[in-house]
Structures are given as structure tokens and as C-alpha cells.
Image 1 (cartoon, rainbow, N blue to C red):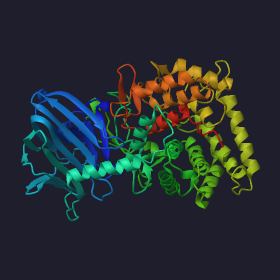
Image 2: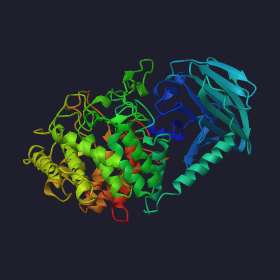
Image 3: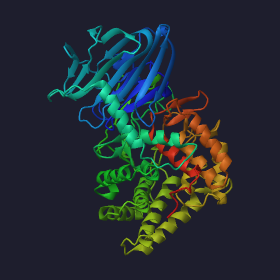
Image 4: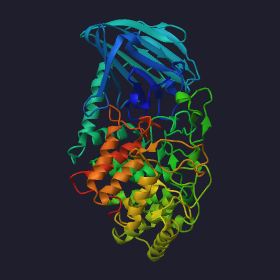
Length: 598
């Protein structure tokens, strides 16, 4: 059985990523891309579905485990204390190469410690057992298009479809390993020096994180760690940012809310862009905007909510029935059927991200404005239609209030592009009229005057934490009584032990069995609202509560179970880390940079 979600750390090369457990086991790794089939899938099954455990031999030997990232880096070290001594395992991935390579170095700290390497080669999410051969330089595993090469001077042997080795590490001794993937039809790449991989990766990450603009005091370290995580979830060849490195980690343990997050959501666009630009990463923001324009190119009325790493549109969802799922949470899914949904708010996100890019200094380009105009024009009638909404419900379309608010954002930002930045357009008055019509309708049909709160959908009585976005996008001021009433209604109706749930999952809105954790981005939005209302101490209290649920490495999943006190959902989650960085800035010493500002 896999460990708790928060017991994992992340290493990556900006093309793919691996999850390394507290026990020294790599239980998840897709090669060569984030969305490729996993060669280690024990996270969603058993060790027999593939893993690489490198740790002191025998669980009774370990008396204490400590781990940390090297400062400003994604190099992970894990120290194991045993009765006979101590060893350190350092994990990293090679940066900048065409051959994805994991480097692991076992270092003796003191005494003599017996160590075991157990490598279970599998391909295609644990389904394919490859042909494994031993060589003078190590071990190879091949099946179909995939080849893995383990290089080590430690002698390995086969043992029940596993590749294992036992050795003793003495104080001061270092034992290196590398595991590299390449297409089985290509020539073998040259072997890499594991210690050199670690050294170069550390230098690469420290150089990148060293560019972070120092705009905070108390929470600077948390922000930098979140930015490093966002960078690690970036697919370098295109600039796309995946929502998470995993698929099917459950929103409720044992439940069916298990989705594939290894794709790029447009909804995260503005949040991600703000986080990167606020921290001084203009090149990354530029790269991301270019990815966005390539991905969404085409007919605006066929805009998708998510795309593949290179802008792929067919993300067909299927169930992997041979994997039992994380702690029995089935089904395990690859692909995401929500990519075919109609979600009105995405149109607002796209126009807003182009507006924010311009506002923060990215030079406007003709294609961006042309596409923004086409998106706004396609919304002139589409905004009146029901949709599946921000939470990608599978219980039927509705007139979701948040969706309408984001349609208003699309026209508001398009109007600003003309009025503030002088971009050309001849039908400005029509856009203004549509913007005002949406605003009136939302305030009339999306607001329950008897309870003084905005509601999930028109004429509904349900609450929805997405309504916390209303002041963040400038639809109404945070101090407006209707916004204040909504914040208090959400605090009393959707908050549990200090964390905010998205909505009442016992309703029929999403077409799924009830039950899930609190949604961490929504809780960050609550802190933003409190800060905008001048309730700074309350906002800081919420923010510090969120920081406290990060794991020991500073990583967050999508959700949190405040009763079981454990993280839930795909991990690490880009949206959670984006919101952490943006809320930290909201609460920081410098003036906040907010989406609602021109």
C-alpha cells in the first residue's frame, strides 16, 4: 500500500516528475512526459505495479527518517537513522537533457548500514513486464517503444520479476545509481555520472530560484518553494503547466472522484501568470502566454477548458482496470472527459490572462488581441447558455453564477483593452451594454436577498465557494454588503474546522456520490476576501492555517481532510501553490497586485 499523500516528495526535470516516499521508494514516474504511461505505478496499486525502493535493508532497522530539499533547489535528500549507523539518499533528475534520467546517490554518514535496492521495472501503468537483461554497466529493461537503463557498479540480480541488490555503506562512502529512459529504437545514450547530475541539477535550480524577486519577509520561503514546484510542473518544450504530476489520487479515500490532472487547464491561467510575474519571472510568463495562444488557436466557440502539454485536444478518458487505486479508490482514470465540457468561465479566464499579461508588462502582440476579440464576440450569445461550471460537474448543465461572473470579466477586460490600452475595436458600446446586462442579471438571479448571499446557480439555494472570486475579479467590491454576506454564508455553510469546501457534495449538482475534502484554493480565496475587507488578522490566521497543512517539504495537494488531517487529491497541485503565492503577496508588505485592478 502506498503511503499518505503528504509522505511523498517531488523531483523533476521540467518534462516529467517522480514522487519519492519517506521510505525511499519512487512510487510514481511517467516517462518521457508527465502524461506518458507510468513505469512506476505503485502509488495507485502495489509494488508489483512498479517502483524503485532504495533504503536500509529491513524496516526494523530504521529508527528515524529526516528529509529536506536543498535550499532553493529540487534536489531531495532523505536521511535514515539505523541501529548500526546512518545513510543519506540524494535524489534528483538531470536538467536540460533529451534523455530523462533519475540520479540517486547513497551516502554513508556514519557506521555501517546494510542497504537494499529493489527495482521493479514495469511499463504502461504497471501492466507490462519488460524483458530485463544484465550487462557489465548495469541492467536494461525493454518492452515495445520503451527502454530503461540502470547504471551502477553494484551487482544486481533477478528475484521474482524484481531487480535487487544488497550492499553495505560505510561512513564517507558514496554509491551512485542512474536510471535513464530512451526510445527502444534509438541508440543508447551515454551514461551520466549520478553525482554530476545531482550537482548540476542543484546549480540549475538555485540559479532559477535565485531570480525570485524578494518582495516578502515572513513567507518568502513558502513562496519560493511554491514557485519551484510550479516550475517543476512546467513542460519545458512548450511552456504548458500541468495541474499536477499525478492521476487518480482521490478527493475522498475509497471514493470515485479520481481524475487525471496531468494536463494544462486554462482556468489556472491568470493565477499562474500573476504568481510568476509578481516574482519577476517574465520569461516564464511570456513562454506560458505563447503556449496559451498556440493551444487555443482555432475557432473560439470550440475553446476547451484544458489541453495537453503541447496543446493536444483529444484527451480521451479511460479506466485502467488492472490498478486497484490509491487505498482502493477506484476507478483509476487516464485522460479527462471534462475536456469536452462547455465551461463558460474559461472564456473569461482567457481574455483576463491576456489583459493581465499586457498590464504587467508583456508587450502586446497582434495575435493575442485578435484572439481576445474573437473570444469576446463568441460570448455575445454564448453567455446566456447553461454550462458545466468551474467544478466540471457531471450532473447536467446549469446557469452557474460564477460562470456568468467570468463572462462579465471577459467583456470587462475587452473593454479595458480598448479604453485603457488603445487597442482597436469598433463595437465598444455593444460590449459595454453586454457587460452591464450580465452584471444586472447576476445581481438579480444569482443573489438570494432573503439570505444576503450569492448562490451557486440561478434561483438555487446552494452555496458555492467559487463565489469568493466575485471581489477578486472586480465584479463587486469586497466591502459590498452582498459580498460580505456571501463570505459569511460560506464561512458558516461550507467551512469545516477552518477549511472551505467547494460546495455541498450531497446535492445532485455533480452527479457523483457525496464526499470530498476541503478545497485548498477556496480557502486561500477566503483569506484574500478577508484581506480585501480590511480584516487582516483574520486573513493571516487563515493563511497560516493553510501553511501548516503543507507537508514537511512545503508541498500541497488539491484538498485536505480536516477530520483525518491528511491531504487528498492529485499531488503536488499547481493551483494550490499558485494560490499560496498570490495570497502571500496579498498579505505582504508591498501593495497587492490584484486581478480587479486596471
